[in-house]
Length: 86
Image (cartoon, rainbow, N blue to C red; front, top):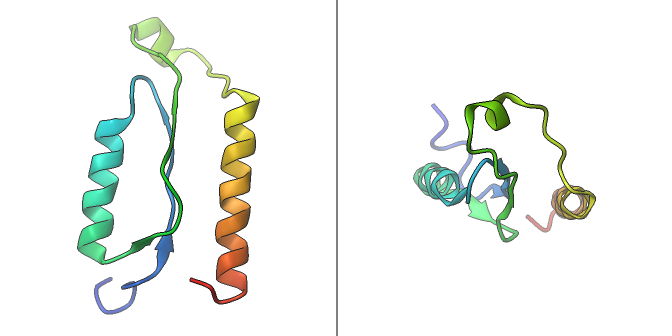
């Protein structure tokens, strides 16, 4: 069981969505709340606007700015864990 082993651990979310991604974010937050995790960065949601069956199955390209933001968030989370901040 996870309870008793993960409380207070840090997390961040990076979501690539076909629409607004808010539903996915809400579900992740519900799970994280149940596990008593601690959000340490604002959510990042990239809308790739894949709404048709063709767009959903097509290869996606994440904009460079979103990739930079994701890398920065991941690096900050890793550094915070490394130095014991989280």
